[in-house]
Length: 127
Figure 1 (tube, rainbow, N blue to C red):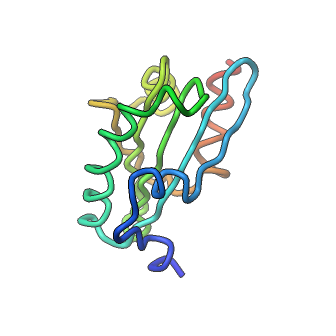
Figure 2: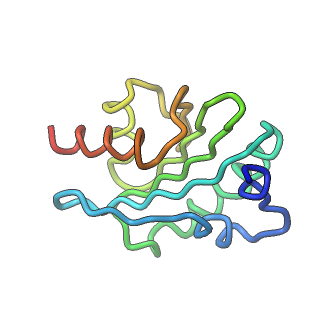
Figure 3: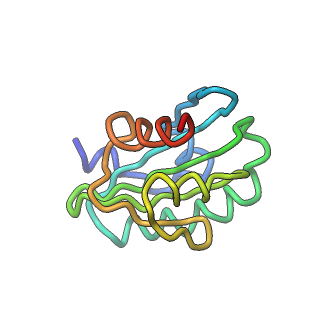
């Protein structure tokens, strides 16, 4: 099941982004969060390399204040989080106390958008 979910093969950056992409409204903020799971670091890095230029170029068309994309390594229970939009990097720094470099950070132990990422972002925005 995980292998099938991580099969992005010949998909375009747009297809990868919207494969599992959800919009959340938290107060006055609209957050969009996508996620793809991987079983190899190599596959994760390949998708990351494809998505970053796409998101830099297309972020304004997504009608979200902040866009996050989780590249989740299910074997090592780690997520490479891509952050775009005004305030997205600051929000992640405050929520997770991590360094965000070039729209990206590593969240160790974070694998679930619903149970781990979203609740922490909601709490930080509301605090």
